[in-house]
Image (cartoon, rainbow, N blue to C red; front, side, top):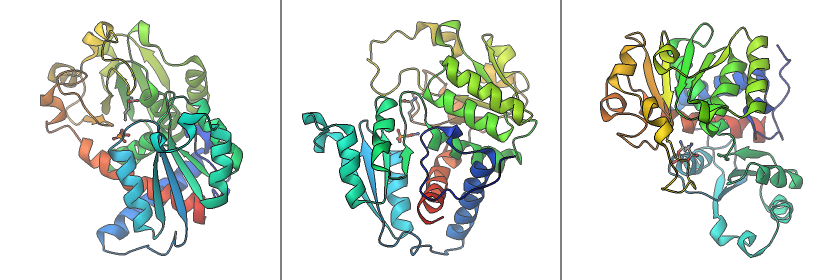
Length: 312
Ligand code: CP
Ligand code: NVA
C-alpha cells in the first residue's frame, strides 16, 4: 500500500488521484466528523477564514447543499457561482477564471459539462474538487464507499453490481471500488460499455487490491450474489429528453431482479431517481433501499475532503 502523504493542497478530479491509503484517510476522517456531529461536537474553527468557490455548469441539490452546509459547519465561507453569473459565457477562458479565483479563494469545487474543463481549472494552483463531470463523479462514489463500509462492514470480498448504462457514476464506482478492494460488476448492454481507459485503470487497481472488475451483459447473472445493487438515471443532466434509452429497458432494477441477489443485499442510487424508469418505486422505496443514508454521507465525506485538502 502506498504511504500516506498529506493531502493538503492536492486536487481530487478523478477517484484515483488519491491512493488507497489516502482514500482511507478521507473516509476515516468522514466517520469521525459524522460521529462528532451526532454528539453535537462542532468543528467550526477548521476552515475559519477560508473561502471555497463552488462552480456549477449544471444544476444540483445534493452536491450544492452538502458543500455549502459542510463549509459553513467547518467555519468557512462557500461561494455559489453559477456559470450563468460568471464571465465564462462571454468568452473568458476557464484558465483565466482559475487564475483570478486563485487570488481570492482557497479552493474550488466544480460541476462541469466536460471533464477537460477541470484540467483548465487546475492552472491557478488551487486545490480543486470534481463535483461531477461527464466522465466521473468521485465525491459521490467516495460517499458510497463509506455507506458500503457502514452497512456491510467493509469492502473486501463484497460485490457491487452497477446496473444500467456505464456512465460517470459507474466509472467512479469502478475506480473507487477497485482501489478499496470492492468487486465491481458493470451490468450493461453492449451499447453502453464503460470508457476503455477507465476500465483499464480500474482493472489495474482491482488487481493491486485483491478485487475484480467485470462487465456482464446478462442482468440476472450480473446481480447474482451481489451485496449491493446500484443504478443511476438513464439520461444524464444535459442529455436531450429525446435521447433513445430503449436498449436500457431490460436493465431496470425491479423486485424480480433484487430477488436474484441474496436477501441481505442493499439497493443504492446516487439520486435524483426517476421512479419507474431505471428502478421501480417498490425497490427504491422498499426495505432494501439505503438511498437516504447514502445521501447523508455526501455531507460527511465532503467535509472530510475539505479538511484534508485545506487544513491537512
Ligand atoms: N447525487 C448528486 O450529485 O446529486 P445532485 O445532482 O443533486 O448534486
Ligand atoms: N449520471 C447522473 C448523475 C447525477 C448525480 C448525471 O450525470 O446526471
